[in-house]
Image 1 (cartoon, rainbow, N blue to C red):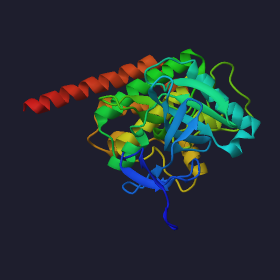
Image 2: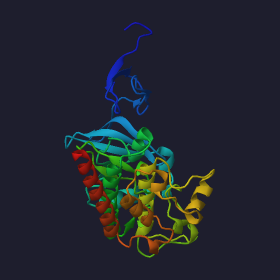
Image 3: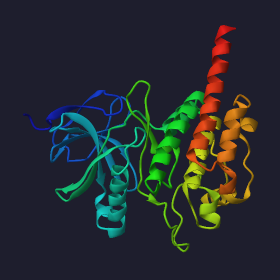
Image 4: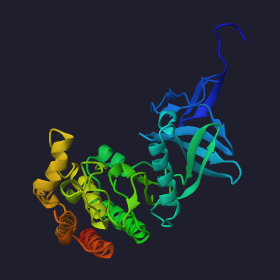
Amino acid sequence: MSEGKKSLKMVSCGRCSAKNFIPSDLPSFETQPCNKCGGPVMITVKLRQFELRGVIASGGMGTVFRSYDLNLNREVAVKLMKPEIAVDPIQVEAFKREARACAGLNHPNIIHIYAFDEADGQKYLVMELADNGTFDGQIETNGRVDELLVLDVGIKIASALDCANRHGLLHLDIKPGNILFNNDEPPEPKLVDFGLAQSSEGGRDPDAGVFGTPYYIAPERISIHTEDFRSDMYSLAGTLYHALTGHVPFEAPTVNDVALAHVEQPLKPPMEEMGDIQPETDEAICKAMAKSPDDRYQSYNEFIMALTAARSNLLVKKYRGSEE
């Protein structure tokens, strides 16, 4: 090979499947932008029986790779813990907690955990693959999400949270970015990221910090530092509110102001934001986002029934509209 020419390898982009030619000597885990969509592409990396083929997402704890299990001949997601995080025992414990929390739950709308292990100095989770975008991505792309899809997601994720609660777990970080979709037809929503999950038994230290996403956080978690399943219910309703209206329930100049608004500021009903939202959906969201947990639905079954009634009513309206 003449000087100045480099050996190239063809790889497919994990986002758009476009073919890319990248240097075959590209260091492990180093990426280059896809020539079509700009997404990260990389040389396949072998980790035990797993081939890590492309980046799906990267967060504070680690990076998730679209991968292939050579032993079982199936696609999976592998989440590698970031090296700088892996030296912190507290962060490692949170990583393990996510694995244990999910592994104990068997629900079609909770991401399945297949393994938690370490190889070549890398701590990693092996998970079910759900790479058909996020609820957050749908909001960003469309501005607002169709009401029927919002209700479908609400019903299924409420059922997933009910399953977690029955197993003594609170999620504590419900937000659009933690709801993924798989490649089923229609795509199935999957709840992910149990890194902040806590036991629902016995409460917690009132002096402990409050973790979670302030745009969807329940007021009692801020005002009196307590939480139960109704706190996750509030956050799910806030997520549905965002999808229905195209903006978060409370907006303010700073994150602290946003968190405080959940405690002090009255919620503007979705119907007042968008007149095409039906009253049954509006009522379900507003009740689940009541300031006091005692004013919310007192079980996930109640919340699911309200969302299901709203969904049925919407379908009837659509059917009648199609006949006219």
